[in-house]
Amino acid sequence: MTGHRIPTAHHDGQAEPSGDAEADIAVTGAKSVAAGLTAVGVSLQRGIEQMGPLRTAATLTKLNQRHGFDCPGCAWPETPGHRKLAEFCENGAKAVAEEATTRTVTPAFFAEHSVEELRQAPEYWLSQQGRLTHPMVLRPGEAHYRPIDWDDAYALIADEIRAADDPDRLVFYTSGRTSNEAAFCYQLLVRSLGTNNLPDCSNMCHESSGTALTDSIGIGKGSVSVPDVEHADVILIAGQNPGTNHPRMLSVLEKAKANGAKIIAVNPLPEAGLLRFKDPQKVHGVVGHGVAIADEFVQIRLGGDMALFAGLGRLLLEAEDASPGRIVDRRFIEKHCAGYEEWAERTRAVDWETVTRATGIDMDQLRTVADMLANSQRTIFCWAMGLTQHRHAVATIGEATNLLLMRGMIGKPGAGVCPVRGHSNVQGDRTMGIWEKMPESFLAALDSEFGISTPRKHGFDTVDAIRAMRDGKVGVFIGMGGNFASATPDTAVTEARAAQLLPHRADLHQAQPQPPGERSHRTHPAHSRTHRQRHPEVG
Image (cartoon, rainbow, N blue to C red):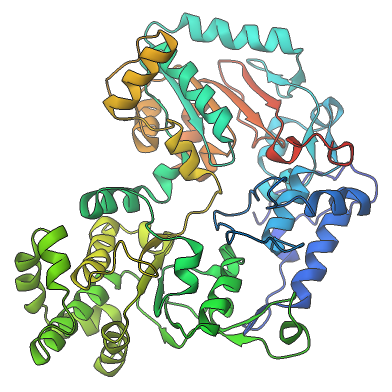
Protein backbone atom coordinates (compact mmCIF):
# COMPACT_ATOMS: atom_id res chain seq x y z
CA MET A 1 0.00 0.00 0.00
CA THR A 2 3.02 2.28 -0.12
CA GLY A 3 2.17 5.61 -1.72
CA HIS A 4 -1.61 5.16 -1.49
CA ARG A 5 -3.51 7.97 0.15
CA ILE A 6 -5.52 6.72 3.12
CA PRO A 7 -8.93 8.36 3.70
CA THR A 8 -9.26 10.43 6.84
CA ALA A 9 -10.95 8.57 9.68
CA HIS A 10 -14.38 10.03 10.32
CA HIS A 11 -14.98 8.88 13.89
CA ASP A 12 -14.34 11.16 16.82
CA GLY A 13 -11.26 10.12 18.72
CA GLN A 14 -9.81 7.94 15.97
CA ALA A 15 -6.32 8.80 14.87
CA GLU A 16 -5.85 9.51 11.19
CA PRO A 17 -3.65 6.83 9.60
CA SER A 18 -0.45 7.85 7.88
CA GLY A 19 -0.28 8.05 4.10
CA ASP A 20 2.08 5.10 4.05
CA ALA A 21 0.46 2.02 5.59
CA GLU A 22 3.80 0.23 5.93
CA ALA A 23 5.18 3.11 7.99
CA ASP A 24 2.85 2.07 10.82
CA ILE A 25 4.31 -1.46 10.99
CA ALA A 26 6.81 -2.15 13.76
CA VAL A 27 9.17 -5.09 13.20
CA THR A 28 10.28 -6.77 16.42
CA GLY A 29 12.25 -9.86 17.31
CA ALA A 30 10.81 -13.36 16.95
CA LYS A 31 8.46 -14.45 19.71
CA SER A 32 9.16 -17.60 21.69
CA VAL A 33 5.89 -17.81 23.64
CA ALA A 34 2.21 -17.27 22.83
CA ALA A 35 -0.72 -15.81 24.79
CA GLY A 36 -0.19 -14.85 28.44
CA LEU A 37 -1.27 -11.55 29.96
CA THR A 38 -0.38 -9.71 26.75
CA ALA A 39 -3.21 -11.49 24.95
CA VAL A 40 -5.64 -10.55 27.72
CA GLY A 41 -4.62 -6.91 27.54
CA VAL A 42 -4.94 -6.72 23.75
CA SER A 43 -8.34 -8.47 23.83
CA LEU A 44 -9.76 -6.01 26.35
CA GLN A 45 -8.20 -3.03 24.59
CA ARG A 46 -9.73 -3.93 21.21
CA GLY A 47 -13.09 -4.67 22.79
CA ILE A 48 -13.30 -1.43 24.74
CA GLU A 49 -12.08 0.63 21.77
CA GLN A 50 -14.75 -0.81 19.49
CA MET A 51 -17.63 -1.61 21.84
CA GLY A 52 -17.13 0.19 25.15
CA PRO A 53 -16.81 -1.60 28.52
CA LEU A 54 -20.44 -2.69 29.03
CA ARG A 55 -20.92 -3.99 25.50
CA THR A 56 -17.54 -5.75 25.69
CA ALA A 57 -18.53 -7.58 28.87
CA ALA A 58 -21.97 -8.51 27.52
CA THR A 59 -20.55 -9.83 24.26
CA LEU A 60 -17.43 -11.69 25.37
CA THR A 61 -19.26 -13.55 28.14
CA LYS A 62 -21.58 -15.01 25.47
CA LEU A 63 -18.77 -15.99 23.10
CA ASN A 64 -18.55 -19.78 22.56
CA GLN A 65 -21.02 -20.40 25.38
CA ARG A 66 -23.90 -22.87 25.13
CA HIS A 67 -26.51 -20.12 25.26
CA GLY A 68 -24.40 -17.63 23.35
CA PHE A 69 -22.87 -17.72 19.88
CA ASP A 70 -19.91 -19.35 18.15
CA CYS A 71 -16.80 -17.31 17.57
CA PRO A 72 -16.38 -16.09 13.97
CA GLY A 73 -12.60 -16.13 14.38
CA CYS A 74 -11.80 -19.79 13.65
CA ALA A 75 -13.23 -23.30 13.48
CA TRP A 76 -11.68 -24.85 16.59
CA PRO A 77 -14.47 -26.48 18.65
CA GLU A 78 -15.12 -26.50 22.38
CA THR A 79 -14.44 -29.33 24.79
CA PRO A 80 -17.74 -31.11 25.58
CA GLY A 81 -19.14 -30.37 29.02
CA HIS A 82 -18.11 -27.44 31.19
CA ARG A 83 -17.28 -24.12 29.52
CA LYS A 84 -14.85 -21.64 31.02
CA LEU A 85 -16.03 -18.11 31.69
CA ALA A 86 -13.57 -16.80 29.10
CA GLU A 87 -13.99 -19.33 26.28
CA PHE A 88 -12.23 -17.25 23.65
CA CYS A 89 -8.81 -16.10 22.49
CA GLU A 90 -7.33 -12.79 21.39
CA ASN A 91 -8.27 -13.45 17.76
CA GLY A 92 -11.87 -14.17 18.70
CA ALA A 93 -12.12 -11.04 20.82
CA LYS A 94 -10.85 -8.95 17.90
CA ALA A 95 -13.27 -10.58 15.44
CA VAL A 96 -16.27 -10.04 17.71
CA ALA A 97 -15.22 -6.46 18.44
CA GLU A 98 -15.45 -5.70 14.72
CA GLU A 99 -18.91 -7.26 14.48
CA ALA A 100 -20.34 -5.72 17.65
CA THR A 101 -18.65 -2.35 17.21
CA THR A 102 -20.54 0.84 17.96
CA ARG A 103 -18.83 2.58 15.05
CA THR A 104 -21.08 3.21 12.07
CA VAL A 105 -20.61 3.95 8.40
CA THR A 106 -23.42 6.27 7.34
CA PRO A 107 -24.29 7.67 3.90
CA ALA A 108 -22.28 10.76 4.85
CA PHE A 109 -19.11 8.65 4.80
CA PHE A 110 -19.71 7.64 1.19
CA ALA A 111 -20.62 11.20 0.23
CA GLU A 112 -17.26 12.31 1.60
CA HIS A 113 -15.15 9.57 -0.01
CA SER A 114 -15.29 8.55 -3.66
CA VAL A 115 -15.12 4.91 -4.72
CA GLU A 116 -11.67 5.39 -6.20
CA GLU A 117 -10.42 6.97 -2.98
CA LEU A 118 -11.78 4.09 -0.92
CA ARG A 119 -10.31 1.50 -3.27
CA GLN A 120 -6.84 2.84 -2.48
CA ALA A 121 -7.34 2.31 1.25
CA PRO A 122 -6.17 -0.88 2.98
CA GLU A 123 -9.03 -3.29 3.63
CA TYR A 124 -8.15 -3.39 7.33
CA TRP A 125 -8.65 0.37 7.57
CA LEU A 126 -12.00 0.06 5.81
CA SER A 127 -13.13 -2.64 8.23
CA GLN A 128 -12.25 -0.43 11.19
CA GLN A 129 -14.63 2.32 10.10
CA GLY A 130 -17.66 0.48 11.44
CA ARG A 131 -20.95 -1.09 10.45
CA LEU A 132 -23.06 -0.08 7.48
CA THR A 133 -26.30 1.65 8.44
CA HIS A 134 -28.07 1.81 5.07
CA PRO A 135 -28.20 -0.11 1.80
CA MET A 136 -25.94 1.65 -0.69
CA VAL A 137 -25.87 1.65 -4.49
CA LEU A 138 -23.25 2.71 -7.02
CA ARG A 139 -25.01 3.81 -10.20
CA PRO A 140 -23.36 3.57 -13.64
CA GLY A 141 -20.97 6.46 -14.21
CA GLU A 142 -21.14 7.74 -10.63
CA ALA A 143 -18.13 8.12 -8.34
CA HIS A 144 -19.89 7.77 -4.98
CA TYR A 145 -22.14 5.17 -3.38
CA ARG A 146 -25.56 6.61 -2.55
CA PRO A 147 -28.24 5.38 -0.13
CA ILE A 148 -31.17 3.40 -1.50
CA ASP A 149 -34.23 2.23 0.42
CA TRP A 150 -34.75 -1.48 1.00
CA ASP A 151 -37.72 -1.91 -1.34
CA ASP A 152 -35.90 -0.26 -4.24
CA ALA A 153 -32.75 -2.26 -3.49
CA TYR A 154 -34.57 -5.59 -3.58
CA ALA A 155 -36.44 -4.53 -6.70
CA LEU A 156 -33.15 -3.70 -8.43
CA ILE A 157 -31.74 -7.14 -7.62
CA ALA A 158 -34.94 -8.95 -8.59
CA ASP A 159 -35.09 -7.13 -11.92
CA GLU A 160 -31.53 -8.15 -12.76
CA ILE A 161 -32.14 -11.79 -11.80
CA ARG A 162 -35.34 -11.93 -13.85
CA ALA A 163 -33.54 -10.36 -16.81
CA ALA A 164 -30.97 -13.17 -16.95
CA ASP A 165 -31.65 -15.27 -20.04
CA ASP A 166 -30.02 -18.29 -18.38
CA PRO A 167 -29.97 -19.04 -14.62
CA ASP A 168 -26.40 -20.30 -15.02
CA ARG A 169 -25.39 -16.68 -15.67
CA LEU A 170 -26.09 -16.05 -11.97
CA VAL A 171 -23.40 -16.68 -9.34
CA PHE A 172 -24.07 -16.81 -5.59
CA TYR A 173 -21.06 -16.74 -3.27
CA THR A 174 -20.96 -17.20 0.49
CA SER A 175 -18.40 -17.74 3.23
CA GLY A 176 -18.14 -19.53 6.55
CA ARG A 177 -19.33 -16.38 8.31
CA THR A 178 -22.86 -17.40 7.28
CA SER A 179 -25.06 -19.28 9.75
CA ASN A 180 -26.49 -22.74 9.04
CA GLU A 181 -30.02 -21.36 8.77
CA ALA A 182 -29.05 -18.56 6.39
CA ALA A 183 -26.94 -20.94 4.30
CA PHE A 184 -29.81 -23.41 3.91
CA CYS A 185 -32.25 -20.69 2.84
CA TYR A 186 -29.64 -19.23 0.49
CA GLN A 187 -28.97 -22.48 -1.37
CA LEU A 188 -32.72 -23.19 -1.52
CA LEU A 189 -33.29 -19.83 -3.21
CA VAL A 190 -30.42 -20.40 -5.64
CA ARG A 191 -31.58 -23.86 -6.67
CA SER A 192 -35.16 -22.64 -6.97
CA LEU A 193 -33.85 -20.18 -9.55
CA GLY A 194 -32.39 -23.09 -11.52
CA THR A 195 -28.64 -23.09 -10.92
CA ASN A 196 -26.01 -24.78 -8.76
CA ASN A 197 -23.54 -21.89 -9.06
CA LEU A 198 -22.61 -21.80 -5.37
CA PRO A 199 -18.89 -21.07 -5.01
CA ASP A 200 -17.81 -20.63 -1.41
CA CYS A 201 -14.71 -19.93 0.62
CA SER A 202 -14.00 -23.63 1.23
CA ASN A 203 -13.08 -23.90 -2.46
CA MET A 204 -10.05 -21.80 -1.56
CA CYS A 205 -8.95 -23.42 1.70
CA HIS A 206 -9.75 -27.08 2.48
CA GLU A 207 -11.20 -28.30 -0.82
CA SER A 208 -8.06 -30.40 -1.26
CA SER A 209 -8.63 -31.93 2.19
CA GLY A 210 -12.18 -32.88 1.28
CA THR A 211 -11.07 -34.41 -2.01
CA ALA A 212 -8.19 -36.38 -0.50
CA LEU A 213 -10.17 -37.64 2.49
CA THR A 214 -13.17 -38.63 0.40
CA ASP A 215 -10.84 -40.73 -1.75
CA SER A 216 -9.14 -42.35 1.25
CA ILE A 217 -11.65 -42.65 4.11
CA GLY A 218 -14.91 -42.00 2.25
CA ILE A 219 -15.84 -38.66 3.83
CA GLY A 220 -14.24 -35.26 3.39
CA LYS A 221 -14.19 -34.28 7.06
CA GLY A 222 -12.10 -34.78 10.14
CA SER A 223 -12.55 -37.98 12.12
CA VAL A 224 -11.63 -36.81 15.63
CA SER A 225 -13.14 -34.78 18.46
CA VAL A 226 -11.52 -32.58 21.10
CA PRO A 227 -11.39 -35.47 23.63
CA ASP A 228 -9.55 -37.54 21.02
CA VAL A 229 -6.88 -34.86 20.75
CA GLU A 230 -6.63 -34.63 24.53
CA HIS A 231 -5.95 -38.38 24.82
CA ALA A 232 -3.68 -38.98 21.83
CA ASP A 233 -0.18 -40.40 22.26
CA VAL A 234 1.30 -38.46 19.34
CA ILE A 235 -0.07 -35.38 17.57
CA LEU A 236 1.63 -34.35 14.34
CA ILE A 237 0.81 -30.78 13.30
CA ALA A 238 1.83 -29.87 9.75
CA GLY A 239 1.26 -26.63 7.86
CA GLN A 240 -0.66 -25.06 10.72
CA ASN A 241 0.15 -22.27 13.19
CA PRO A 242 -2.29 -22.75 16.08
CA GLY A 243 -0.91 -19.82 18.07
CA THR A 244 -1.64 -17.46 15.19
CA ASN A 245 -4.75 -18.92 13.58
CA HIS A 246 -6.42 -21.25 16.11
CA PRO A 247 -5.17 -20.11 19.54
CA ARG A 248 -7.77 -22.00 21.58
CA MET A 249 -6.28 -25.20 20.21
CA LEU A 250 -3.23 -24.52 22.39
CA SER A 251 -5.16 -25.14 25.61
CA VAL A 252 -6.21 -28.55 24.23
CA LEU A 253 -2.62 -29.34 23.27
CA GLU A 254 -1.54 -28.32 26.77
CA LYS A 255 -4.04 -30.79 28.22
CA ALA A 256 -2.82 -33.49 25.83
CA LYS A 257 0.73 -32.83 26.99
CA ALA A 258 -0.38 -33.22 30.61
CA ASN A 259 -1.85 -36.60 29.62
CA GLY A 260 1.50 -37.68 28.19
CA ALA A 261 1.17 -36.80 24.50
CA LYS A 262 4.17 -36.07 22.31
CA ILE A 263 3.74 -33.29 19.75
CA ILE A 264 5.56 -33.01 16.43
CA ALA A 265 5.47 -29.59 14.73
CA VAL A 266 6.22 -29.53 10.99
CA ASN A 267 6.66 -26.02 9.64
CA PRO A 268 9.17 -23.97 7.63
CA LEU A 269 9.17 -21.31 10.37
CA PRO A 270 9.10 -21.69 14.16
CA GLU A 271 5.63 -20.90 15.53
CA ALA A 272 5.71 -19.28 18.95
CA GLY A 273 2.56 -21.06 20.07
CA LEU A 274 4.05 -24.46 19.31
CA LEU A 275 7.24 -23.58 21.17
CA ARG A 276 5.66 -22.42 24.43
CA PHE A 277 2.14 -21.51 25.56
CA LYS A 278 1.16 -19.36 28.56
CA ASP A 279 -2.50 -19.93 29.39
CA PRO A 280 -3.69 -16.66 31.00
CA GLN A 281 -6.42 -18.57 32.86
CA LYS A 282 -3.88 -20.63 34.80
CA VAL A 283 -1.38 -19.55 37.44
CA HIS A 284 1.64 -20.95 35.60
CA GLY A 285 0.53 -19.05 32.51
CA VAL A 286 0.54 -15.76 34.39
CA VAL A 287 3.50 -15.93 36.77
CA GLY A 288 5.33 -18.95 35.37
CA HIS A 289 7.03 -19.85 32.11
CA GLY A 290 4.05 -21.61 30.57
CA VAL A 291 4.21 -25.01 28.89
CA ALA A 292 6.52 -26.17 26.11
CA ILE A 293 4.28 -27.62 23.40
CA ALA A 294 6.34 -29.20 20.60
CA ASP A 295 8.60 -32.11 21.52
CA GLU A 296 10.05 -32.21 18.02
CA PHE A 297 10.24 -29.25 15.64
CA VAL A 298 10.71 -30.33 12.02
CA GLN A 299 11.77 -27.28 10.02
CA ILE A 300 10.79 -28.50 6.59
CA ARG A 301 11.40 -26.84 3.25
CA LEU A 302 8.43 -25.30 1.48
CA GLY A 303 6.51 -27.95 -0.42
CA GLY A 304 8.47 -30.83 1.08
CA ASP A 305 5.63 -32.38 3.07
CA MET A 306 4.78 -35.15 0.61
CA ALA A 307 8.41 -36.25 0.55
CA LEU A 308 8.39 -36.20 4.36
CA PHE A 309 5.35 -38.48 4.61
CA ALA A 310 6.73 -40.81 1.93
CA GLY A 311 10.05 -41.05 3.77
CA LEU A 312 8.32 -41.73 7.08
CA GLY A 313 6.30 -44.44 5.34
CA ARG A 314 9.46 -46.19 4.20
CA LEU A 315 10.98 -46.02 7.69
CA LEU A 316 7.81 -47.48 9.22
CA LEU A 317 7.81 -50.32 6.69
CA GLU A 318 11.45 -51.04 7.49
CA ALA A 319 10.57 -51.08 11.20
CA GLU A 320 7.82 -53.60 10.41
CA ASP A 321 10.34 -55.77 8.54
CA ALA A 322 12.61 -55.73 11.58
CA SER A 323 9.77 -56.56 13.97
CA PRO A 324 6.85 -58.15 12.07
CA GLY A 325 3.42 -57.38 13.46
CA ARG A 326 4.50 -54.41 15.61
CA ILE A 327 3.96 -51.53 13.17
CA VAL A 328 1.52 -52.49 10.41
CA ASP A 329 -2.04 -53.22 11.56
CA ARG A 330 -2.73 -56.12 9.20
CA ARG A 331 -6.12 -56.88 10.69
CA PHE A 332 -7.32 -53.31 10.14
CA ILE A 333 -5.90 -53.23 6.61
CA GLU A 334 -7.50 -56.52 5.59
CA LYS A 335 -10.88 -55.46 6.94
CA HIS A 336 -11.02 -51.79 5.98
CA CYS A 337 -8.39 -50.92 3.35
CA ALA A 338 -7.59 -51.52 -0.30
CA GLY A 339 -4.38 -50.95 -2.26
CA TYR A 340 -1.98 -51.54 0.62
CA GLU A 341 0.44 -53.77 -1.30
CA GLU A 342 0.72 -51.26 -4.15
CA TRP A 343 1.34 -48.44 -1.67
CA ALA A 344 3.94 -50.47 0.22
CA GLU A 345 5.79 -51.40 -2.98
CA ARG A 346 5.90 -47.77 -4.09
CA THR A 347 6.94 -46.54 -0.65
CA ARG A 348 9.76 -49.06 -0.26
CA ALA A 349 11.25 -47.61 -3.45
CA VAL A 350 11.37 -44.03 -2.09
CA ASP A 351 14.83 -42.55 -2.65
CA TRP A 352 16.51 -41.15 0.47
CA GLU A 353 18.48 -38.51 -1.40
CA THR A 354 15.25 -37.20 -2.90
CA VAL A 355 13.58 -37.11 0.52
CA THR A 356 16.39 -35.26 2.29
CA ARG A 357 16.80 -32.80 -0.58
CA ALA A 358 13.07 -32.05 -0.81
CA THR A 359 12.52 -31.75 2.94
CA GLY A 360 15.82 -30.27 4.12
CA ILE A 361 15.68 -32.74 7.02
CA ASP A 362 18.52 -35.10 7.89
CA MET A 363 18.07 -38.82 8.38
CA ASP A 364 18.57 -38.66 12.14
CA GLN A 365 15.53 -36.43 12.59
CA LEU A 366 13.49 -38.49 10.13
CA ARG A 367 14.23 -41.59 12.21
CA THR A 368 13.33 -39.74 15.42
CA VAL A 369 9.92 -38.79 14.04
CA ALA A 370 9.35 -42.29 12.63
CA ASP A 371 10.18 -43.82 16.03
CA MET A 372 7.64 -41.51 17.71
CA LEU A 373 4.97 -42.66 15.25
CA ALA A 374 5.98 -46.31 15.58
CA ASN A 375 5.72 -46.25 19.38
CA SER A 376 2.33 -44.51 19.44
CA GLN A 377 -0.90 -46.40 19.97
CA ARG A 378 -3.06 -43.34 19.28
CA THR A 379 -1.90 -40.88 16.60
CA ILE A 380 -3.59 -37.79 15.19
CA PHE A 381 -2.47 -35.74 12.19
CA CYS A 382 -3.55 -32.08 12.17
CA TRP A 383 -3.06 -29.72 9.25
CA ALA A 384 -4.31 -26.47 7.76
CA MET A 385 -3.63 -24.33 4.72
CA GLY A 386 0.13 -24.87 4.86
CA LEU A 387 -0.66 -28.22 3.23
CA THR A 388 -3.84 -27.46 1.33
CA GLN A 389 -2.54 -24.56 -0.77
CA HIS A 390 0.12 -26.47 -2.71
CA ARG A 391 -0.51 -27.81 -6.22
CA HIS A 392 0.16 -31.30 -4.90
CA ALA A 393 -2.04 -30.84 -1.81
CA VAL A 394 -4.41 -33.73 -2.53
CA ALA A 395 -1.54 -36.17 -2.99
CA THR A 396 0.22 -34.86 0.13
CA ILE A 397 -2.85 -35.25 2.35
CA GLY A 398 -3.45 -38.68 0.84
CA GLU A 399 0.11 -39.71 1.69
CA ALA A 400 -0.30 -38.50 5.28
CA THR A 401 -3.57 -40.40 5.60
CA ASN A 402 -1.87 -43.56 4.30
CA LEU A 403 0.50 -43.46 7.29
CA LEU A 404 -2.48 -43.49 9.63
CA LEU A 405 -4.27 -46.23 7.71
CA MET A 406 -1.27 -48.57 7.65
CA ARG A 407 -1.15 -48.30 11.44
CA GLY A 408 -4.91 -48.60 11.97
CA MET A 409 -5.15 -45.05 13.30
CA ILE A 410 -8.63 -44.28 11.98
CA GLY A 411 -11.90 -44.95 13.78
CA LYS A 412 -10.62 -45.47 17.30
CA PRO A 413 -10.36 -43.11 20.31
CA GLY A 414 -7.41 -40.74 20.25
CA ALA A 415 -6.52 -41.35 16.61
CA GLY A 416 -7.45 -39.99 13.19
CA VAL A 417 -7.35 -37.03 10.82
CA CYS A 418 -7.89 -33.43 11.91
CA PRO A 419 -8.04 -30.85 9.10
CA VAL A 420 -8.36 -27.57 11.03
CA ARG A 421 -10.51 -25.12 9.12
CA GLY A 422 -10.52 -21.34 9.21
CA HIS A 423 -14.02 -19.84 9.37
CA SER A 424 -16.09 -21.43 12.08
CA ASN A 425 -18.97 -22.44 9.83
CA VAL A 426 -17.28 -23.57 6.63
CA GLN A 427 -18.26 -27.18 7.26
CA GLY A 428 -21.74 -26.17 8.40
CA ASP A 429 -22.37 -24.28 5.17
CA ARG A 430 -21.29 -27.27 3.10
CA THR A 431 -23.56 -29.58 5.09
CA MET A 432 -26.45 -27.13 4.52
CA GLY A 433 -26.00 -27.40 0.75
CA ILE A 434 -23.50 -24.67 -0.14
CA TRP A 435 -21.73 -26.77 -2.74
CA GLU A 436 -21.85 -26.68 -6.50
CA LYS A 437 -22.22 -30.47 -6.77
CA MET A 438 -24.44 -31.71 -3.96
CA PRO A 439 -25.34 -35.42 -4.20
CA GLU A 440 -28.57 -36.67 -5.74
CA SER A 441 -29.96 -37.70 -2.34
CA PHE A 442 -29.81 -34.10 -1.10
CA LEU A 443 -31.31 -32.59 -4.26
CA ALA A 444 -34.10 -35.17 -4.37
CA ALA A 445 -34.96 -34.41 -0.74
CA LEU A 446 -35.24 -30.69 -1.55
CA ASP A 447 -37.57 -31.47 -4.46
CA SER A 448 -39.76 -33.67 -2.29
CA GLU A 449 -39.92 -31.34 0.69
CA PHE A 450 -40.39 -28.02 -1.09
CA GLY A 451 -42.09 -29.00 -4.34
CA ILE A 452 -39.37 -27.56 -6.57
CA SER A 453 -37.27 -28.98 -9.37
CA THR A 454 -33.61 -28.49 -8.53
CA PRO A 455 -31.04 -28.57 -11.34
CA ARG A 456 -28.69 -31.57 -11.55
CA LYS A 457 -25.97 -29.96 -13.65
CA HIS A 458 -22.95 -29.12 -11.51
CA GLY A 459 -22.41 -25.41 -11.00
CA PHE A 460 -19.34 -23.18 -10.79
CA ASP A 461 -16.86 -23.49 -7.97
CA THR A 462 -14.69 -20.47 -7.18
CA VAL A 463 -12.15 -21.02 -9.96
CA ASP A 464 -14.82 -21.80 -12.55
CA ALA A 465 -16.78 -18.73 -11.44
CA ILE A 466 -13.74 -16.50 -12.02
CA ARG A 467 -13.18 -18.00 -15.46
CA ALA A 468 -16.85 -17.59 -16.34
CA MET A 469 -16.76 -13.95 -15.21
CA ARG A 470 -13.61 -13.38 -17.26
CA ASP A 471 -15.22 -14.94 -20.34
CA GLY A 472 -18.44 -12.93 -20.05
CA LYS A 473 -20.58 -15.90 -18.99
CA VAL A 474 -21.81 -14.31 -15.74
CA GLY A 475 -24.32 -11.48 -15.58
CA VAL A 476 -25.08 -11.13 -11.86
CA PHE A 477 -22.88 -11.86 -8.84
CA ILE A 478 -24.36 -12.00 -5.32
CA GLY A 479 -22.07 -12.43 -2.32
CA MET A 480 -23.15 -13.07 1.26
CA GLY A 481 -20.29 -12.48 3.68
CA GLY A 482 -16.61 -12.52 2.81
CA ASN A 483 -14.74 -10.56 0.18
CA PHE A 484 -14.73 -12.66 -2.98
CA ALA A 485 -12.30 -10.51 -4.96
CA SER A 486 -9.68 -10.31 -2.21
CA ALA A 487 -9.99 -13.97 -1.24
CA THR A 488 -9.69 -15.39 -4.75
CA PRO A 489 -6.38 -16.45 -6.31
CA ASP A 490 -6.65 -13.89 -9.14
CA THR A 491 -7.91 -10.68 -7.57
CA ALA A 492 -7.06 -8.41 -10.51
CA VAL A 493 -9.06 -10.47 -13.02
CA THR A 494 -11.95 -10.85 -10.58
CA GLU A 495 -12.16 -7.14 -9.82
CA ALA A 496 -11.91 -6.15 -13.47
CA ARG A 497 -14.81 -8.36 -14.49
CA ALA A 498 -16.87 -7.56 -11.39
CA ALA A 499 -16.94 -3.93 -12.49
CA GLN A 500 -19.09 -4.99 -15.45
CA LEU A 501 -21.54 -7.08 -13.40
CA LEU A 502 -24.23 -6.34 -10.87
CA PRO A 503 -22.45 -7.27 -7.65
CA HIS A 504 -24.71 -7.46 -4.62
CA ARG A 505 -23.09 -7.91 -1.23
CA ALA A 506 -24.56 -8.57 2.20
CA ASP A 507 -21.77 -7.46 4.51
CA LEU A 508 -21.42 -6.51 8.13
CA HIS A 509 -18.95 -3.80 7.34
CA GLN A 510 -18.23 -1.60 4.40
CA ALA A 511 -17.39 -3.78 1.42
CA GLN A 512 -14.19 -3.33 -0.54
CA PRO A 513 -15.58 -0.87 -3.11
CA GLN A 514 -15.87 -1.95 -6.71
CA PRO A 515 -14.68 0.34 -9.50
CA PRO A 516 -17.42 2.18 -11.40
CA GLY A 517 -18.79 0.16 -14.29
CA GLU A 518 -21.70 -0.24 -16.65
CA ARG A 519 -24.07 -1.78 -14.09
CA SER A 520 -25.31 -0.72 -10.67
CA HIS A 521 -23.40 -2.09 -7.69
CA ARG A 522 -25.09 -2.53 -4.35
CA THR A 523 -24.07 -3.35 -0.80
CA HIS A 524 -26.22 -3.55 2.30
CA PRO A 525 -25.84 -4.18 6.04
CA ALA A 526 -26.58 -7.56 7.60
CA HIS A 527 -26.99 -9.02 11.06
CA SER A 528 -24.24 -11.30 12.31
CA ARG A 529 -24.27 -14.17 14.78
CA THR A 530 -23.45 -11.66 17.55
CA HIS A 531 -26.99 -10.28 17.12
CA ARG A 532 -28.73 -13.61 17.45
CA GLN A 533 -29.38 -13.31 21.18
CA ARG A 534 -30.99 -9.87 20.78
CA HIS A 535 -29.45 -8.59 24.01
CA PRO A 536 -29.95 -4.83 24.42
CA GLU A 537 -26.24 -4.46 25.19
CA VAL A 538 -25.28 -6.23 21.95
CA GLY A 539 -27.65 -4.38 19.68
